[in-house]
Image (cartoon, rainbow, N blue to C red; front, side):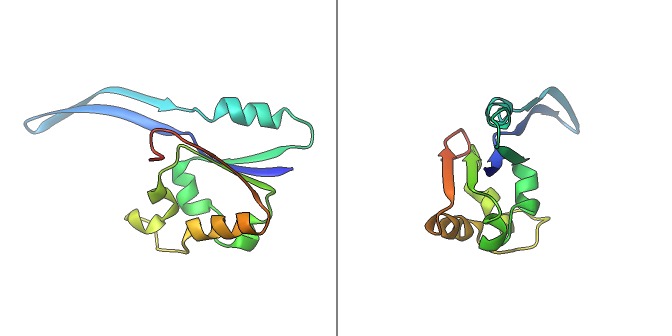
Length: 120
């Protein structure tokens, strides 16, 4: 089984702005995807490709045919705006990825949709 797993990754940073100065007091990378990706990858016959949120905006399959190269799609803690790349100023508008996902599922593709902070 081939699966595409997107989401569950974020960068967190807190900054203070004081007049003309700014300084960062906290920064960390949150890689929530690792446990699920590792558990799936450890299973015989399961291949998992992973895209974080930024990669999803530029590298997510742009057609049902491209997405159909996978048996399953796992979406976890990924905002709707990520799947609508025209909201990102550095991204050229493309196809509606939500419709591509819907057609993928209607054609028999498996979808695991997990909630998270950015999902709602």
